Length: 208
Image (cartoon, rainbow, N blue to C red; front, side, top):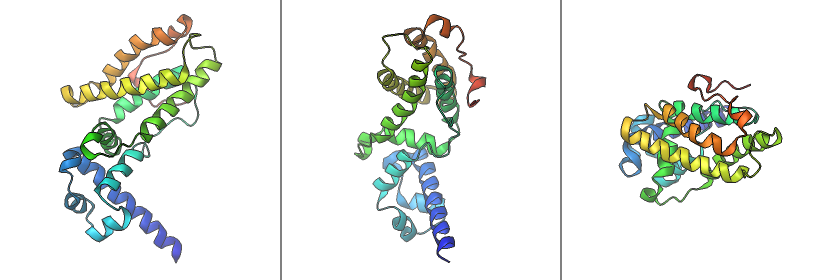
């Protein structure tokens, strides 16, 4: 009997987390009252606080779990997959509420005082893995530091999506990320590799 009870608890936690993501995405941190999250999740205050200690705890969980519903590559494949991955994220940000809320909360942390940097480190690590493979395949220019470029790419992606969100509600984000790569790629990839890497929105999510 313990297993079904545990499974129900896990489902309930996810229901609350996803409801919180929808509320944070719509109202931001300051406007996301626990009562709104309860209403969205169709649950009680006691249930919310059983799984999460506070609104801050809920916000932190949304930030940390922002990528849980993504279809990410199973293994790093190099520069082309990194380009495809960023374009995939650009598309997902237009309709994946958990990702969108997690990104919004991560960017607007001064409002909540969370100081949750681990998610940025996590994305830097994912990008670094692709760049490590790219290095092994001879795709990168000799002076490119894989982790340094991964850190730059996370920062550039973050800033680009903020600008896109403000100007077009992210409808043009894939095109902006494609433009970003057209400027970044010559600085990191060998010329013969640049000629082969496709910066194509239709490829995003096409993992090998």
